Image 1 (cartoon, helix red, strand yellow):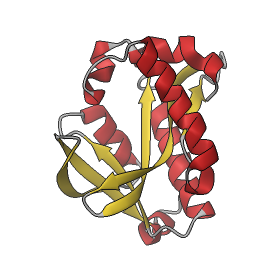
Image 2: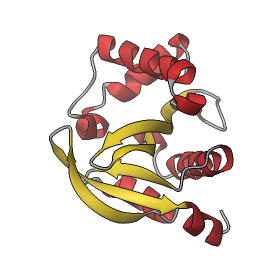
Image 3: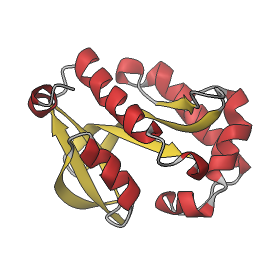
Length: 163
């Protein structure tokens, strides 16, 4: 992700039907902060994780963001796989592919024993993506005051799936 991705991510962040999972649409300042936060993560976070830009195979335009972030949870800091895709690009496999590649990258480059995805219980599309990639619900907890399911996949399960 780079500052020049602003216009593309602005389309994503201004869609209320997509951004309800983040508590509502982002204004321009919040989108710029999102980009900068991820740029900072590349530099500062352990293993330089952060969300990356997701691009269309056909047009190479930025259609979303996703990847790995270190997330504070009810059990300490855990490595989370997350994704957000523009709605007109849903059901094309982008989120599933991003999540699968991210989890694979996590297990290939770190010694983490598991990867999580924090998903609101009523977010059926994201739940399907997690389940397609072998993640299962481990628990529920309130993240930033909102109930979330913690989907998890262990290294052993990932390897057993042949991913």
